[in-house]
Amino acid sequence: MLFIIEALYIIFISLIFVAIDLNNFSGKCIVNLDMDNKKKAMTIIFIHHLIASVAIFGCLFSSKIILILFCITIILIITIGLINGRKCFLTIKINKLCYFKNYNYFPDFFYLIGIKKFDFWNKWGYNVFYISVFFIGIYKLFIF
Image 1 (cartoon, rainbow, N blue to C red):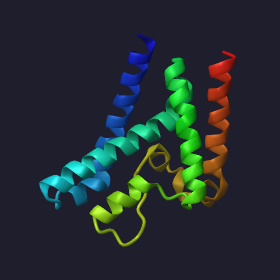
Image 2: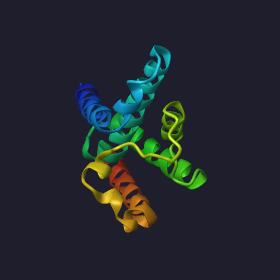
Image 3: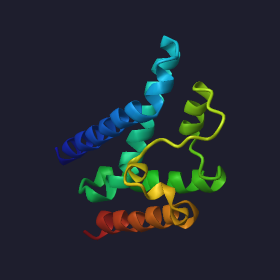
């Protein structure tokens, strides 16, 4: 039961970020897409924000399933970031669908609080955050 409640919280958080994204960034592009590409774009945006919500807030939950998903998500994010120069493959797909010439990040939690505009975040803060919360998740998973 705890897993279901916490999963619903994560979905709710994700939907809030999807709504913010559509109002500020992706919505401008999606309006101009055909119906098939709109469905693809909306699915990609939701999945992206779902993954981001698990990665950012997953360590705050107590369900072992959420904590396992959180740890797997962090490992994937760091691995993909190292391999692909911190460029998310879902963001790349949206940029291609929308014909953006520059790489545009999704407006996630860090964008909303204004931390992405600082160089320290882009150079090393990103990895420090994810490694730190990963260890919090491991601690909660095995010790707490």
